[in-house]
Picture (cartoon, rainbow, N blue to C red):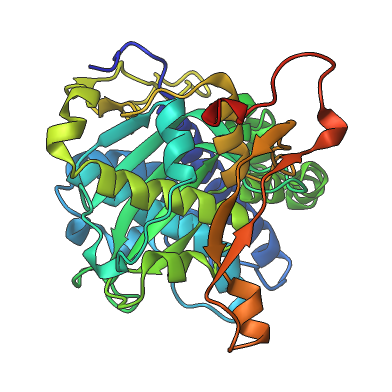
Length: 386
């Protein structure tokens, strides 16, 4: 049975929610300032731009996503496509959080060995529509953060997976699954410190000064960059998981491979049962108090965590190589000096060049990587012929 006392980064969800609240505040503040000078706002001044502070309480009151107050918490009346782009991921995150809080509040914490194995495992001919999802909404926390690319600073240690209904009506039957990867940089995020002073400037009619300060600090851009990243997959697709993954960017592909792999892994109940801990409640996570307010109830409160470990225990070198294989890390593993026995193999290239060639090719015994030959000792692989 895996140990259940490890630290689980579920607080990342509360931090992400606080970023969403602050981003909606920044959007709404920009709208108030720009409207007073007859400028075109870059988001509609409605929905969460006005009612963002009420959403946390609303989540505690509703029992399903179907009960969401769409008028108060979704943007509408867009003037152009750019406005839709500014609110796309924040809106998707809002629905995902609502789905998770009303459906399961479950978190699977994946051990480092299992993370390494799942990230380097092919799912063969499994079709997307046949993936055995454990819940319609759940989180996966990772023991080691995953970088999505070598060039980008984005990394994640918490994934929020939710069934996403039809675009036109979120109350319809889910048609796809959404992965929201929480940005690992959230661990060092702090709320905007000048928020109260900007609100006082607007209240006293000093909109120009408020706009200058808000634009200088660029709060909306900062928080927008910290919103989740990930992707959407069609859950009714007839294609295989591997076909779907082949079209994903490498870092996102690795995350989806862990998600799909864990769903399949959890179904192997007889073998896996000893590697899955009982569900345990996490400690309460409170939102930081602001302007003398009492700390708000965290959205991750009452969530339950299950620790899942690997059937296989990896050596340090195996673990590192498995993690490197799936992620954008090293260029691979270099083989040491060793002896390769004589063998036969299928004639892949030979048959392609000449269809009349033999179907098998005989390979002579040889020493491999003579440049790495040690001064003393027996070559690796030699023991098979002694």
